[in-house]
Length: 328
Image (cartoon, rainbow, N blue to C red; front, side, top):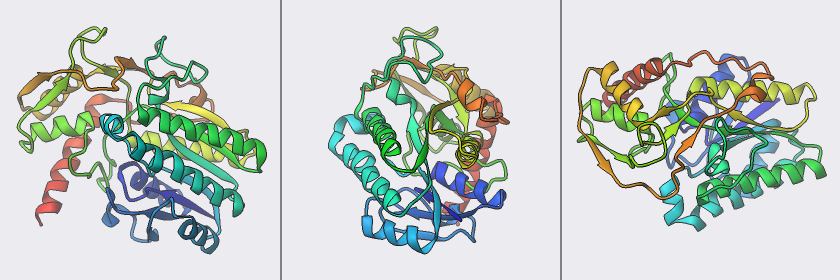
């Protein structure tokens, strides 16, 4: 049996593909290569270039590769962009996910692991936020993902499909073996932006708001290493394979760092003092969001890279290697 990874040539998806192969699982990837790269995948993992919202294309892939489970990463993910282009986000993240889910049901796929987001909580009323807390997203990105969670719940009630919706917090870092990392041009991830500033690839960086109700006024986030995140997907899949019920889990470290704290860490680890400009708030950014992670830990998940210095150090190493690759 084979696991289908949508968006598998992208940042998180490529880490998932490597982890699956490391664990002896058979995998196949669907990616349109709009933000992904063939070289980011293990050489023996098939890449099917196409759109996960193309029902015929997906149906053919499910049949030809005897797909047991789908791990669905493919999505638009930039919060401010979702505010400007809500319909684009609802089409890509929600409508196309519905098409993918229908193909899964029709072809008797047994398990579905969904890449959801902490953005479904909006502005949490408590810290850390728990899965049973109110979901009230404040941007189209979060809403587009929450709608897919609802579709999964309803589909699992009506069909023999089990699912895990994993609500990511802020993903960072790179593969410790240096095989893949955040490679998308103009990516907006804070640690990547700060690392690029430290390496002189950007003329400093902006901080979007220092007037939030947080200790230093900048937004607070729970930063999780991408390898620990992908491991959570395997633990969730193992739970479903053993007959476990469908579930929704936060995936984070239960500890937050402010934007300014992350920048200071990047400066210290890199040894470079780059320019930091204070700008106004961006639309759709909550002040603080940190994960309660009891539920995913109950599945046996144990973080191995819960250290901000390590995350930054690996991001720096990856960015340097990526620059060499692009220059070659």
